[in-house]
Image (cartoon, rainbow, N blue to C red):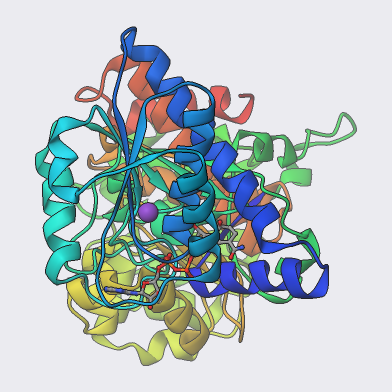
Length: 498
Ligand SMILES: NC(=O)C1=CN([C@@H]2O[C@H](COP(=O)(O)OP(=O)(O)OC[C@H]3O[C@@H](n4cnc5c(N)ncnc54)[C@H](O)[C@@H]3O)[C@@H](O)[C@H]2O)[C@@H](O)CC1
Ligand SMILES: [K+]
């Protein structure tokens, strides 16, 4: 597991390492600059000719990093110049020091108007200290970089991105690569910042690890975390891995129930029961003969529900359920009676959106998995309002409604329902997954993780990560336009074992 910091947290990590541990600021900076220079040198090697590099710098410590990286490259024999964006802003002490060293080293200082003449730009205009919209000369310089045909390496975060949210603060550099220090930044992980940061390298520059202990940063997973999925016990039977009840499907809608149930089986569930509208039972039995398939109708749903709920160790409610009167009644009944972890998705969320008090009154573990449209209906907020700061929006909702919230989007965020709860930012997945049925697969994968007895918040995060990894493998095999939800179901096993 890794952590992603906001600018405010980065500052605290800096201060802790510098003030409490006594590591001089310039030592950290030298390591940041060496990491940046190494990345630039890698790119220089790809050109196979002499290249011209320009470090474009503000007068904060992000600029100081860029000046130091330029000096290091220059000492290595690479042609580097420096352009400082000069306004009335006061320079930091570190910036002044780096400028003195660069001057002593004979580096050339040029005007920012020369940007288009260079092959590679080192972007050190703003880092995590950016605190307001970019305007005036800064905006003009960012436009000039983005219009020029050079490779851009951003220092820490592309200049103009809000490190806390990934939002563009009116203008932002579009980088090909970003070298970020110590920990990734939330702004590099969430769109549009994720797209503008290009390939991100997280470089260790010697921050004291103690420093993040009091900060509650966002978490994210890498492939190493897949090893945390527990092995299957030799001494076990299907009961060891729980019974997942999938309440899904409606008249003429059977696919969602299949996708959820099959995904739960593919990720570890011992037994899956699908409770669906009676006209779906034959088709689902054919699609998934391993499942117990039970049908209900408008008259008997209550008694069928009662029987099935008694045996379940985890319930999925909502995929393809429709919003008809029976679906409403089922949703209300499940929220009244279910006493095991409940994953609520799709139509059940739309039903709840009409009366949000249903969710508030539920007192057991609930994991809800809205996409942005469903989340808008649940909150009454606009897309812009929700995406302005998706981590904050997710945390706030999770806490208010006491649910584990999986806010599905190109970058899915998971939030824990308590004060100062954990938040997870997903780093797996691909545009190939923007297809119908993918959400149904996700509910099954989360249920699968719960059946392996991973605690609910981690099960939700791991489910989201694993689902994205399966999508990536499916894309490699099928190409980005061709992946369907069923392909992801069948690839889940490869993802678990990756
Ligand atoms: N020892 C340290 O302090 C280290 C700092 N590091 C670097 O320092 C960076 C943070 O440095 P700073 O805190 O100096 O901040 P930045 O260099 O990110 O720049 C922010 C400066 O610009 C001003 N500013 C903010 N928004 C503005 C706007 N829209 N228009 C004009 N001016 C604006 C601020 O007042 C501040 O002076 C990190 O991103 C990282 O690159 C790294 O070298 C690691 C070590
Ligand atoms: K930058």
